[in-house]
Length: 152
View 1 (cartoon, rainbow, N blue to C red):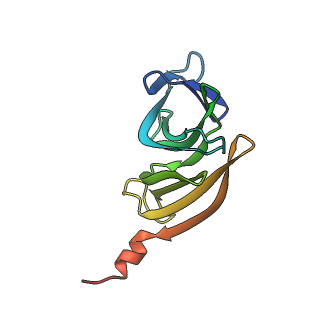
View 2 (tube, one colour):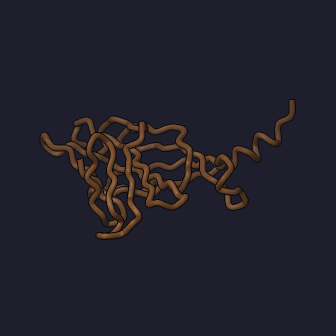
């Protein structure tokens, strides 16, 4: 299946892709399909669609996660434009309910070093409008701050 990331078509084979960033360049782009997948109707046609998470690395320290809707059009699957979730995030949950995509993940706060595990919980909700994901709302919660408020 082909996916579109940052205006570039990425043809995954068996869930992975590796290729040159530019022709003749030493750096490569690596993309893989993560284990995160949710099934459900996201376009209102009563057919099962999907949403997947792709992981993208272009040779640097960043590992970027993208949310990608995959809709069933007749008998074909079509990956729509990806939405960037963030760099070095940690997935918590992903589901589709009432044509809404709900995702929860941990990301680094502005005060956290990227070398430490992320602790800021992000809840995001998307709907498909005109063949593109539109964010419904964004709720943030600093898990570390809440946990530090509790004592045993």
